[in-house]
Length: 244
Image (cartoon, rainbow, N blue to C red; front, side):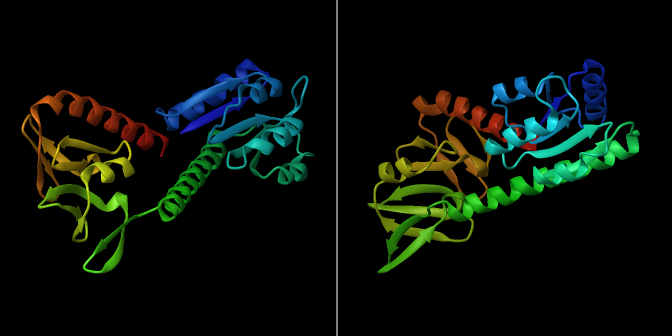
């Protein structure tokens, strides 16, 4: 998860970073010493800690401009002045922390903000999966929609493509090349007769990929590329976990 701190006092920026890292050491923290610097960066943090009283463009002005392009960032104002609290609602502020505040108060607000950020990401992911086009296949005179996320692996047998999903096996007349073109970076074709989903791999060697259900052959010439792409997949997965 990315957190941005925008405050014109370096001492405050350092203090906030220390509090964040103490609780969430893996989070990426970005610093901005002015509203202008934040807006020019085009940064899109998950959480923004924003001071109000700053030289140049103040925090409230910065927030109004920032919100034009960043609707989902969780905004927390940090200020010594209480009179802006009602304006904070106009820019969708999540919270309004008044200095000085103790660690208990800060940790409570930060924890709630992180939870809200994760909930938003989960909702976005759910909506994305719901809206993601499914693979429409015809089998037995019926049209069946198969979500790509649910495919463990596919194989070709007797001019048919067999989709081994988490629910059932689906057979249809088709070409593996056409199926491969519809899948993304989470899939790999280790052998002309197989297409596997990295998500469901449990172990592998130079000849075989073992999945949650079933196994696929590995062509010798594809092994090096497979290992490289599987490593990239796991790196992407780790980054997603860090964000969450």
